[in-house]
Length: 130
Figure 1 (cartoon, rainbow, N blue to C red):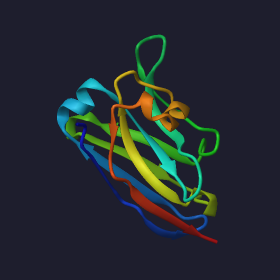
Figure 2 (cartoon, helix red, strand yellow):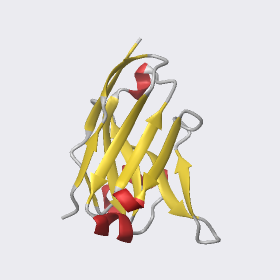
Figure 3 (cartoon, one colour):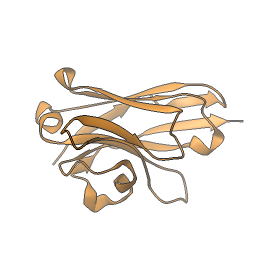
Figure 4 (tube, rainbow, N blue to C red):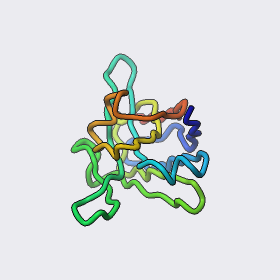
């Protein structure tokens, strides 16, 4: 069972920023690609940011259109940490945010599908007010 723990959520006004963090066991970061998905109340899960591999076998980030240019995913594998820097937040960004592991190194949009993932945390809540 993959165990991941998110932190950094909170309440912020529109236009503000938050930085989410995620940690887990070293083997998770060694054996899988990492990413983030979110789920707002009454809405479907949305994959928003993830690391995957390009044709040169370089691990690169990719993003959902809804967050591209505003959110930045980063990681420090040496510290078993994953981050999501969220800038220019909008009320539409209000959701529970989850970090997840994908041994298949799924694309960001695929993080909406539980079958594409090997585990995720319990989430951290982000609330953006207008």
